[in-house]
Amino acid sequence: MRTGWPRRLFAAAAGLGLALLASGAAEAQKVKLTMYYPVAVGGPLTKIVDDLVADFEAANPDIEVEAIYAGNYNDARIKALAALKAGEPAQLSVMFSIDLFELIEQDAIVPISDLVGEADRGWLESFYPALMANGTALGKVWSVPFQRSTIVMYYNKDAFREAGLDPERPPQNWEELVEMGRILTKRDGERVERWGLMIPSTGYPYWMFQALAIQNGLELMNREGNETYFDAPEAIEALEFWVALGREYGIMPEGTIEWGTLRQNFLEQKTAIMWHSTGNLTAVRNNARFDFGVAMLPANKRRGSPTGGGNFYIFKQTSPEEKQAALRLIRFLTSPEKAAEWSIRTGYIATRPDAWETPAMREYVKGFPYQLVARDQLAFAVAELATFQAGRVRKALDDAIQAALTGAKSPEQALRDAQRTAERLLRRYR
Image (cartoon, rainbow, N blue to C red; front, side, top):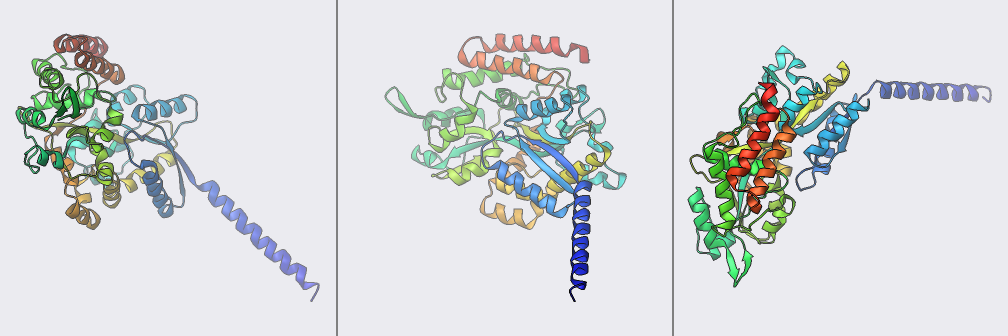
């Protein structure tokens, strides 16, 4: 009896050792992915992304994902490229859809269409065309949409009722925007208690300006990313209108309006209408203590909004196994069910039509039909401003917009200066 006991111990220990070795081998065989992720808009995005990644890892035990949260879109791009240059690259990232030309020029990314087999080409065709526009260039698909948005108009229905306006009929065009904005602006002597309208002009001023230009019948760039039309008459008229909303019509504060605090201003009823990203939709729904509505942006010559937000990219300096693992993660997160879950929990657009047909989304929009506004506005949407030398071109336009809004330059002079800068930067790409 006593001589058999050590044998059993030995066998048990050997079995445990083999199990540990097998476990260690399995762990060693795991493909490990690092993903940079921006959190540019409010809401508990990190928790939501963590949940989605955990779901993926449970379904794909051979892949481990570390999500690194990197501030706004510019931060995500800068950190991802810095890691690449330092020899510690991430495998994938959500970055601005409009970073495409810069990333191609730096040879930093691989076309996703090159990684997809012929049998799976349908996946790349499953997204809304308007959302794919910023991810396609040179005959290839370089990135696919995920954290995507358009600009929508949020409005305070209680303020509309108080002002004697129909709460179910927000402004449909620029003329009505000014007329209703005047009625909604609430003053106590010289002090403004509530503005009729706020459009943010920090953070992403070019994005809001692009919406106004589209509504005035102009797209600000060509599809090849090497021409801009900042000083076109329609662009100058659009910026003159934006300036006039504060300086002439008095329905909006003069000067600049902060992107980061505008949602709070709306929730605190300091403005009756705001233009902002659909990425704020769930946060507004959860925090508004008044009846609110969501509508498409008003038209002038036409309706329109640029698309916005982030796409998934896969970095070139990545092993074949890592590329395929990254592709599996992206496909999982953009599946109809996960796209619907993401949209419901954040307010961003579910990026493919079949996501809106899932039981979860069908049930959700029954109780919250405003989720459909951004989707329906895609019919009038165009690609977001994207060019080579994108950061410098956008900065020239941002500076021009802010110079006009603060009165440092006339809209015409500001946009002519921006166009000259863009011409100089883009000439060599033609």
